[in-house]
Length: 418
Image (tube, rainbow, N blue to C red):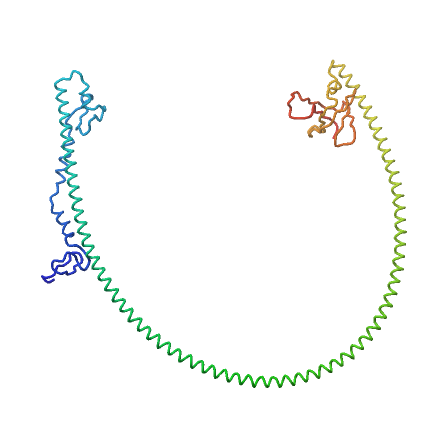
């Protein structure tokens, strides 16, 4: 490094003597020297700080109420919570010793307040000084930034002028090349058009010759086709006359056959209608005879069923009478009891349930009448009245609550019926 240059401590670039900034990295030399000066300034030793803090933390006062030592860093006791000065001020007959403690507290707090105020003023002055330094530094940086901006603006302007000059030269060269290319393309297009015109003339001459040859061939072909068409028409005329004569004969024959077939079909249809009418009459007669026979059989069956029912009812009646007599004897033997007639008679005209067998759901029926030894019930989905003898009743369930969840007044369970 020569003695006339100033080397940058950050990037090593050699600048001119007395330069404020490095031309290589833009570092300000004055800013690089400030941290070193700050490091050289004396700082308080950590040991002295710890010693002062330990001295300040030593207890210098005891709480007059609980005896808790205090360094008077707070105005109240950390144990019992009393405020020291207010505690002494509330004592009416204060002793000289307590007055001395109160004066000590007031003096101590006053000195601490004074030191705190001085510390605040010192910090405010340091802050003001630091703000002033920052302001001066900011103004200096703004001046440097403005100078650097102007230099960059000048360099950018020169670069733009150089770019404009180069662009103009490039444009002139491009226009010259474009003109040369245009002329070359124009010459190539003229030659291509000349070649195309020559080819078009040759193509037109060839097409004219081809057209003349084609027309000659077309004329020959047309004459040949005309001759062939004339011959074909003649043959077609002969064939058409022959076909017309054949069709006339065929039509006459077809009409004769059609007339014969129509007469045969008419005769067959007439015979079929007569046969159908005869069969219908025969079928109606058979149906009438069958219906009469069926009605006679149905009437005989109904009579047989009525007779069987009557006999069954008589047998049931006899059994009921025998059972009733047996039960009467049993009732007479065991003593007076309410009769089934008295028990069920109050439900005459009401809906009751009939269970058969015992585990089946009750079937709703209307109790028409309670007789001496049987009841008459009617079901809405049936067409007959049932006579249930008392001896077929296994047990009776009566609804004892008015709000029972059923519309049946009583439920009768039958036995011996499946």
